[in-house]
Image (cartoon, rainbow, N blue to C red):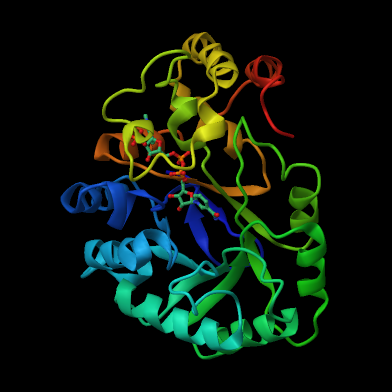
Length: 315
Ligand SMILES: NC(=O)c1ccc[n+]([C@@H]2O[C@H](COP(=O)([O-])OP(=O)(O)OC[C@H]3O[C@@H](n4cnc5c(N)ncnc54)[C@H](OP(=O)(O)O)[C@@H]3O)[C@@H](O)[C@H]2O)c1
């Protein structure tokens, strides 16, 4: 496993990270989920990404259970807040930051998280209030660094312009061969400001592994077949997308790679990307994904990927 420094922080993180949306405390059974976390540690994965809202707290509880007894300084915990935990508990107000962080720490069975991320921007709370409260929890030692997910360049700039507050060190955008939206603006702005990218759904929820064929029923053990986990896959399972993705198979084969390895190496080709946050429903997938670390794609392969996916990828 290779490691990269997260923005201007002193956090050295594995370039392949393990995510927990939909899977842990959700659609993947407890024992299997714990086995995935343990396999990740064995594979040298040190960055674990979660959120208070994943599984209604279940993902954090599962991670807390799976990581109990393991040297706390040997792994890096990243969690988030913003989405509703109850009808009255949502957003990035000072009260919510203190309340949600304390609840996350209890579920994660720890006294601090390494990275606390704003899951989205909160237009209903003054940015000053959010940044002041985030700074308080850093100074109280409950959080080491702060980050955001899917903020616009303007929102990022305004947070950095505020005086006397902690600065963000991480950005968590969706980024994959099929979703290139953060490349033109978010990547260069963040690079200039010491903010690293830890990117989500680098396999496009499994679509980029090639397991879904156009016009075919999804495999029985896949996310697309799970009523608990398939609700956000609609746009990815279109036939035109699946046809284009099938054309990646021979490219990966000629390069001696699996499609999953090629997709993870593709996001890691960018120096702005600190880590690919990959989900896994089985320990074997964790091994396969961790093995992508250190893989470099040739210019010919990169050009061929661009050509094949241009009609369906979002820039
Ligand atoms: N900040 C945000 O708003 C946000 C949003 C979404 C996700 N995230 C983070 O990003 C993480 C990753 O996102 P994601 O899980 O949606 O997408 P992903 O990593 O692109 O896809 C993960 C899924 O692909 C399948 N898979 C993984 N490795 C495989 C392999 N080697 N071979 C075949 N299939 C494989 C598994 O599903 P099956 O085996 O069930 O098919 C797995 O659950 C999340 O867990 C979360 O931590 C953040």
